[in-house]
Length: 323
Image (cartoon, rainbow, N blue to C red; front, top):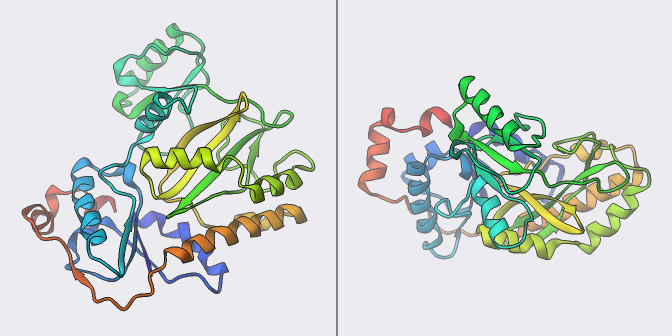
C-alpha cells in the first residue's frame, strides 16, 4: 500500500491511478492525521507539500519519517521533511553546484542581481510570476517597493534571474523528470509560445515534434542530470521541471506531489497519444515498485511532549486548519 501525506486539496493528484487495473492500493492522509494517529499501518509513506510546512510541522513530520524507516520490513518513507528545500533554497543550491547558470534572491533583502532580466514570483505557492521581465536595477527596486506598498510580504517573494530560450522554432518547452524511489524517467513535453510554460494545451507543440518526443522519452535523455538534482536536493519522490538553455539543462523547481492524471490522453495526435501512454505506464511501473505487500502489524506512532501538545492544544498548531 502507498500512503500519500499532504493537504486535502491535493487528493486529486493521483486520480490517474484509476486508469490502470494493476495500480497499487493508495490512501491519502493529511498531516493532521499523521500527527494525531496512534497507529501507523504497514505501507510506503510519501511525504508531500514539504515546502509549505511550518518549521515546527517539518520537525515533527521528520521525526515520524525517521520512525517509519526504522520500523523494519513493511515500512518505508520517502522525502525527509527535515531536508526539503523551498524554491529559493533549491535554486541557490543548484547554482552553487554549477548545474544552473542562474540564481535567485529573496526580495526582502533588496537584492542586486548579477544578471538581468529578472522577474518576481511567490516563494510559498506555485503561481505565475507577479511581474513581467525586469531589465534594470532601478526597475527592480521600484517593483519591490510597489509590491511592499500593496501589502505583499517581501519575505514571500523571490527575484529570479531569467534563464529561458525557445526550444524549437518560437516554442518554449517545459521538460519534466520524475524520481519515484530509485527510478528516474522523463515525462511528456509541454510547449508554449510564451516563456513561462505552466500547463499549455495537450497538443500545443510544433509540427512533427511528437516523433522527436518519442525518441527522447525512450532514450530517457537528460535523466542523469535530473538524477544529480534530486540527489542534491535529497528528494526521493517528485518531479523536476527544467528546460534546455545554451545546450544545458536548467532546472526551475521540484514539485513534491506531481499530478498523476490522464489529461494527456485527450491528444488528437496518434504519436502524442502513444507517448502519453508510454510515459504513464513507466510512471505506474515505478509506483508499483514502491508498493509494500507485507502483512506486518501496525506500529505505534512516536510519543513525545511535542506530539502530545499538538493533539491536546489544536489552537496552537496550524495543521488542523490548513490541511
